[in-house]
Length: 315
Ligand code: PMV
Picture 1: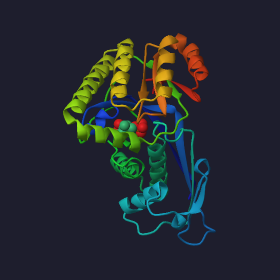
Picture 2: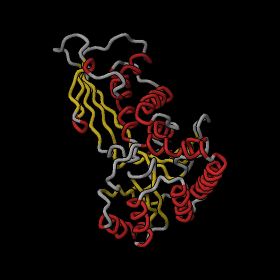
Picture 3: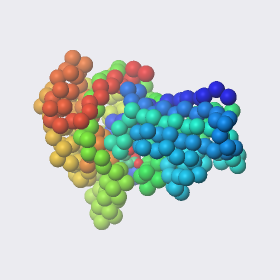
Picture 4: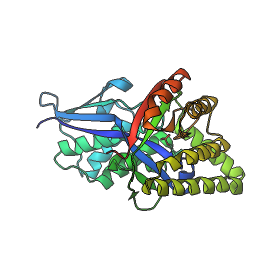
């Protein structure tokens, strides 16, 4: 059997994070500049059934049966095996690498799962359909996040711009005119489960107040989708600024995120906001292509540990 490999992109949420957990819409796009890669090859010399896993970025080099219960990679492998109705796997070697920064809102966990499920099921001769790949990635996200909305696994599995609402069928949408984003990393690793949990406690204490904020975020996400479809990407700048203010009111921003957002705006970006769970991870800034280098340099000087430039809608 030849080695099989697959990649899966990163993703970024453009609008609607946190509110999406409460059944409001969110918009996310794949980020193809970063990706996870999985390779599976037969290991005919290994004892029957031995699955060796090597994932250098997370210092993992172990056999499958040595991984603890609930390990995300072991869970992805088990769910793939079960989806195919198999009780055991042939001896093989799995190698996983990724250029997606971890725990920073770029979907590294979901991308690893999607790449792994695709390669393993193809290696076993029965590539799983996208719906199954996405639902396995969702179950693994539950381990990372607790109560994920499902947006990460969806956008990464389908590799398309996604307008997402919980428990509604997948909707993609057209990016009528590509636009340039900078994605700047604060370097602070912030678990999404923590900010999602904090927002939940606030919402439980004052539901009407927080439902109002979620409604305002939802209205922004709807306007943003319309602007993207109508080739008016410039309109996204003020919407990003307004969405960031609402995320501050949810208390999921941080001084570092606010500093990068302020730096982008002062440096000539058309609008900026945090992206993802918040309190760390990444922010995004909408820029005219001619100003991208200048704003990226200002962001680095302001402390960003990495800046990715992406053209949304070019895929
Ligand atoms: O931190 P990320 O990019 O994985 O995104 C989290 C987005 C939230 O809306 C905060 C949570 C969720 O599950 O949708």
